[in-house]
Length: 119
Length: 107
Image (cartoon, rainbow over all chains, first blue to last red):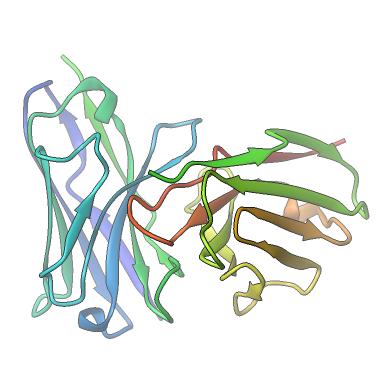
């Protein structure tokens, strides 16, 4: 069974940092492009970042570019999102999602981890 | 960046109705268009990928069509479990934008 389990969310002061993790199992993690998507409770989905299978290609939404860094450890089957200089508008539920079956769509999602940037 | 505009933003319908949701892209995205269903408190769930391909396990009452900039998701006969929010998403190039969502409610 494919599973994606996020962790690392929590309450952080504006300007602070947080690292999210997404533990993958049930599929060949190293063969899948991976993504982070966020959602303010009650609002829509917003794509944040993606990383290639080997980790050599990364892309970011303009709103997080220069502040967030996506990475992966294929030996540990884990995806990361390092979030620095957090702002109030980064407050959201963060999902990891994978292109597991075929490229171009997110066929597996985690349940999300909540990040709250507030003083 | 590519913008996706969904319509309507919300829709009231009854069990058994046929409903259509549209998604318009700000530029041509070929067939790189996917649809997701999200129920309250749950993660999104892929319904249709590459415009018209049904994800495994998704009922055949769901269908998708379109190309270039105009796309539709159709549910032929609504069932109680279909009442949720639906999002289109383009995977033509990053940033992989989503539409703003269409909330399908029971009339």
